[in-house]
Length: 310
Image (cartoon, rainbow, N blue to C red; front, side, top):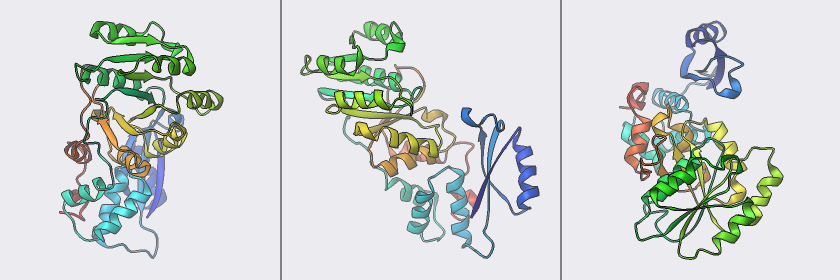
């Protein structure tokens, strides 16, 4: 299938452009507000697909492929899912099972034992909120200490929230300070909040890796991010050797393909899902039911609605 993306002031304007360029056979795969980096191109990002000339897919395979592409799945997962289902008509449950079987779900409590856990991820991904959710969910007999490292947030809500909840809080100046504090608190669950890194922070990231490389890392990502952006982020944070993933803003995700692709391709187990911005709302266990709900939630096309499944 030939895929083409249009940026326009409205979905209708994009459809008009696609009709003129691709003809009446163009299939609307997805439509969403353009990301910040693309808004100068148009307010909406609209993706169309069109069968390649001379290539005729089986009806079930073609329609399922359109559904998966519309959900923003990585091309390799689209190919794998089509191969697993062999182009036959399948139920929505069978489609979901074919996707979920490639994803590792943490069934044990990822944060219920003493040790150190470094929360890493892009700025705005929800690291601080996720860390606070974990701190509030910790077993009452387990001493918890939050180590804050983000100099841009000195005096911010993390320290105040920790004080209100009766949770230990320490500010560490730089990654070397974290390593010193971590060694002085045996038996604690140490939750370490880090700044968000950008691609230009190479030297700074290397310093963090050298100081904290021996501590466990949890990579926090937004479920609303596009698949392509998540793939780049996974590569950027690979040097921290993350042990698991937390996806935030799952209740805001328009498509399931991004976070499911990231989880599948990275091979990292899902440790939890974040819903909403409030720290008092707990992390949800990464159950299969929630994944199916995001995949086939209200207002989203079912795989069966694509015509190739039942």
